[in-house]
Length: 245
Image (cartoon, rainbow, N blue to C red; front, side, top):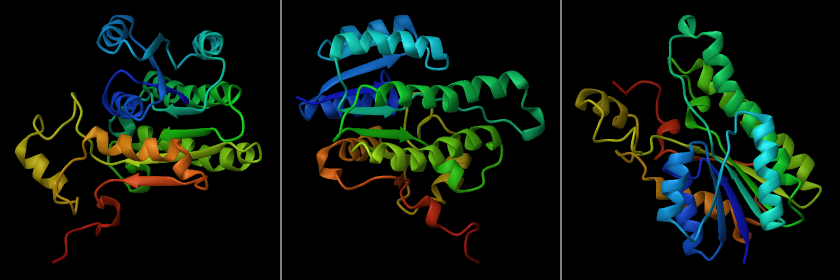
């Protein structure tokens, strides 16, 4: 049985990936940031090993990864999914905003990948959750997109370095994806229409559709896929910048 660890695994794309991999016969472990939410998750999913850790703090990453190493011994796969988004005009972004986002999206991802790779051997796989936003310009996304750009470039570097050890590194860039906080039902109709007009498939993704791609990249079915960023956006990033006249 293969073992996978997922950060930000108690909701959204992380949860969908955990469910998908459990169904595929994997031993799944997740890290959640909030103790109460993670405990509720553990009660709902007793077959999944759960850990609490703040992935924006290196000391916390080292602490929780030491527990995981003691419990699991090794990892066959790791999905670096934890992240947050601050969407403000460039001139309104504070140092606190910057530090909070960089600490989780870039620094936390960097050191979580480092810790996970130390538990891996040839044939293992890492997947990083980036975003469609760094592929195209998006107002109010200067901070979020720049952190995602950083880890997207990290994907390519690690594919070279860890590839020499037989460890594959890839990324996924999800487009609009339904979640509890952000979905087609809670967006104002006019804004939703504007968003969907940019998506050739005319809808948001479900989290499971993203999870299926992550599961493929983590599996041996993708054994020769390395250093790639798979955009899963219904075709949004290949559309014209403006509607045709």
